[in-house]
Length: 71
Image (cartoon, rainbow, N blue to C red; front, side):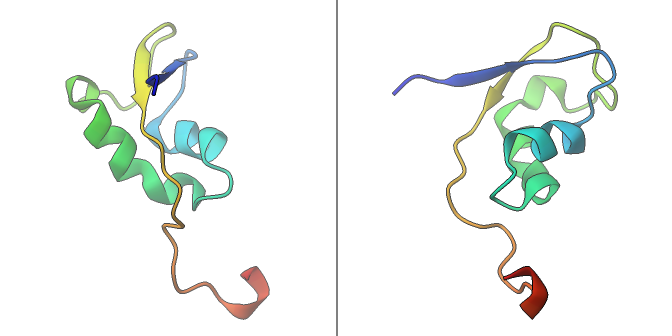
């Protein structure tokens, strides 16, 4: 299994990256998993361009108690 990576774009934030990469898994709600996979970048709030982040595979839904109109 190969490790997926993401190259940051100037102005990226943790939640924006999650929203873009995990559209079917709770979007920005899985931000903690992305941060845990990249502990060297934990102090960065707004990313510069060109940093390589490790993208963990997330297959389960992070949100378990969705309201009826979101199921």
